[in-house]
Image (cartoon, rainbow, N blue to C red; front, side, top):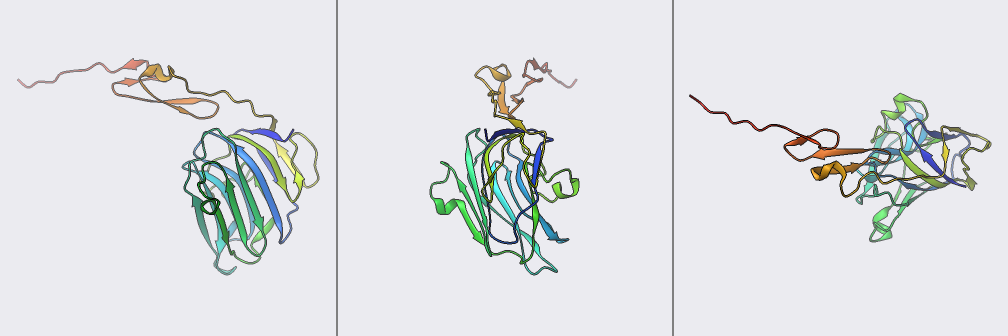
Length: 231
């Protein structure tokens, strides 16, 4: 009941976060290298987004503001493990006077290599968080690392003990184009790309990176070789 599919125009907003002591957890899966898992609004112009958790180059990245409120700068950290493998992985975020982020995944050799505990700009967090992409704001999206909406699935999204149920009316929450369940068809097979290139699984479609001299959507065509001579 708590599993949902996100497409390019899907997001969830929750508008009742506390000033301190927020806990956010969720599980995610995708094959894409880029996508916003969540974007937490900020209160200062220099930190329009307080914090983001995203996939970038297939790895989990976290952004957060550091410095005083007048000139806060956005810091970032990442866990150096590829998690765009269509498997389920989990994120836990706890915000007190510190910001704690943990990736729970079989890809992490040690829990210490997949956790972060840092200070942040006091007074920066706002009350709104968006799951999947920063709402309909193009400006905020451009402030993310991935600059891409989440395409894939999430489940067990929990914000301060409130479990998000797709398609249900819940207080302080808006759901846009959320689909229940997570139907998943692998896009690449042994004979993909006519066995003439590499198939890249893009979750709901695929791309062929063709070997020379082949080209086309499925590497089904080839360039005609030519010989050049002088004289």
